[in-house]
Image (cartoon, rainbow, N blue to C red; front, side, top):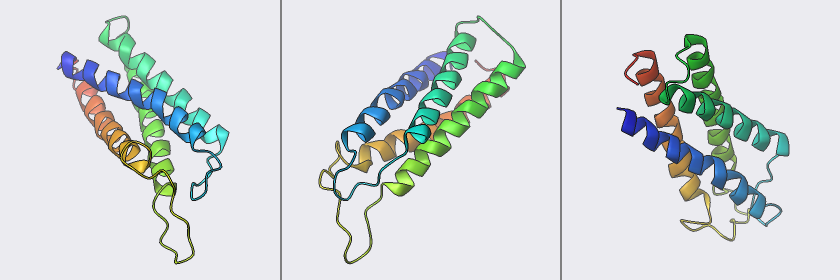
Length: 135
């Protein structure tokens, strides 16, 4: 189970690095919904806190139940913020709306959808494994 947990940490770290890069690179492009800096920073900060506490737990530096709950809460908040980004970055349905110009697997929301839905599932799995003391 520990190997699985390290894989989830690596994937979450990838989301942490790529989300701000992709959103900032796409800023002010036609068809792209602009995201506020505070929401993006809150997403990054909560993910760093959650991942940091998870890594400390995986390295057996702490076994605190309170820190575990804080890690789970931080990851849940990061997942919800990420999913809210995706909800705003969907294809417009209006007849007069403009599609996002770079909407392909690596440039549009598809990679982010896979990453954030995976992070949400990973958060649930982390919570289950940590609370059951299987890690």
